[in-house]
Length: 295
Ligand code: PRP
Ligand code: ZN
Image (cartoon, rainbow, N blue to C red; front, side):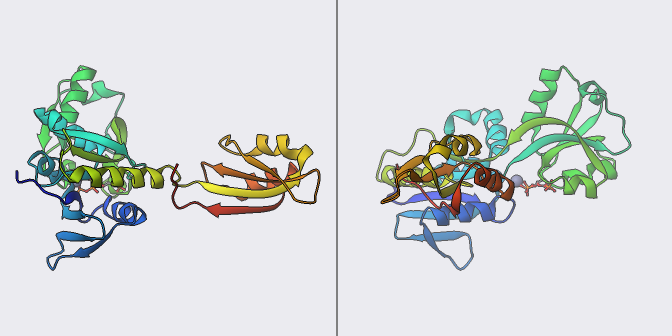
């Protein structure tokens, strides 16, 4: 491969991960100009470009050096590793979105009493390595039918008795009269990279990206809580804060005995939680969104 100065990241062109990926990159301050065919996005400002592709193609493209980084579900990464190419790729960060399960599902009216019920059946999947590994660990002999798409209709077409596919909301299963009965793998979006990482100018871009990704993911869903209270109430208020943050307590000018408290709460603060904090003695409560953080 020719040395390259610009970093290339592959993301899913359209699918479950696309919007949250674009949102993450946007929060990282990266702006792009899309090519006419919509497959390549040239980065303005930072030397970071995007390739928009099928998610299942991303590990292979990184393995071949066509791009350096990618965002895929852990399911895709794990399935690729099962091809024996595990050394070419490594996960850099779990991204906390795109949560789903690779699950076994059977037709609604089929009896399921544990993995043993799958013995001798045909199971359709796009994840043959992961499914085979799971079946082996359960000690179950079943036929794995590998399909590249539309796995959920295989039982109705009579080409399989059960399926092993991604489930997020469960809507696809319900629409196809299937029910989820076992979990093969819990998944979420992962930032993956070529292993070893490129050693040239792209290294700086990777470090910049990781710093910003960390700055965004660290505070995703966090809220900054500001409030005032009598100093005597601080212990009770701290006890009422969700997620046990360590707050900063500031003396208020000219008001002995009164403090201002600020705390970074890891979760959203609902009305009930706020009301409990208020009952503990807090006044003038403000809940602010947190966009990014830099240590
Ligand atoms: C998965 C899976 C189902 C759907 C399940 O596809 O194959 O079609 O998501 O989601 P639901 O439980 O919310 O209905 P994916 O988005 O990974 O697309 P791909 O199969 O084209 O890669
Ligand atoms: Zn896919």
